[in-house]
Image (cartoon, rainbow, N blue to C red; front, top):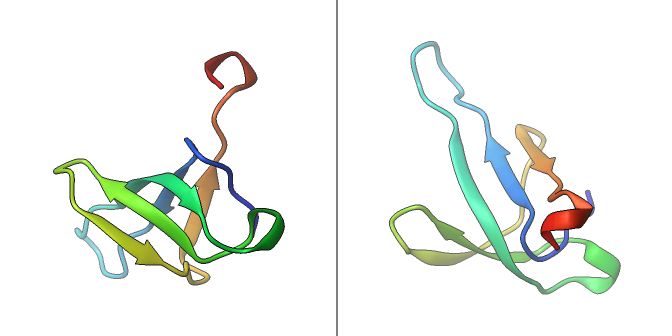
Length: 65
């Protein structure tokens, strides 16, 4: 998995009816865009995340960088 600052990580719900959890990458801590990442959720909470297989990267478009 490779992500850049500003990309979004989407962790899909594990059971029926559970919503996806979306966070924004604010800092890449691994080499060359690899995990772990410092992320910020919609409520402003920041944490360190090493995403698992249920997580998908939504890359920010070039014009938004």
